[in-house]
Length: 222
Image (cartoon, rainbow, N blue to C red):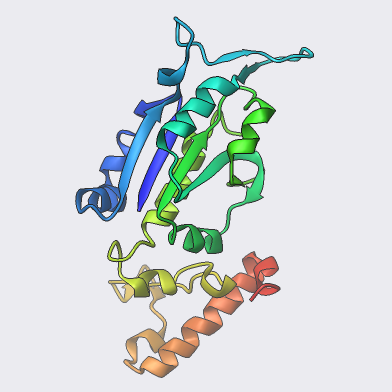
């Protein structure tokens, strides 16, 4: 998979793409991720990419020309162009699975008061990571990249992401490690029994119980 990220702040991605699972996946060439500075595509001598919005109002609006040229510089017939915006559809785990099957993803990070509306004609999908406002789309795009890359073949064991929260619309079951007794709080006996079927049933029951308590809305989907 190839991912191109279009942003006004490339340096925000430096440490994120070097660490942990993402860093290893890039090093092993399981994914190719490139960061592009939108300012490089500005025709203004001072690399200006924003201006006041028509009709008044506070804040600056990103001009269409630099965005258009940035997208065109990396778009291919296999590209899926995604705009990160609070106006987008809510991002969920199933979308991460679907996006992990794509050959090429272009992530467009907004800033200031957002994009000139005419840029939306170039976009295939608009995504939001939640009903709150960030200073820009960079952090949101990092969330999407991380959630996709970990699902790529060979990045982590398939069993790991098949048993975690939101798979089958259930939250993950409780997990424990050593010591067996920590300050009087003990590991459930079933996990020490070695009886795999009983453990499987217990984990499923705990997943359902936790989901009912914390995210009952997910049970309607499961």
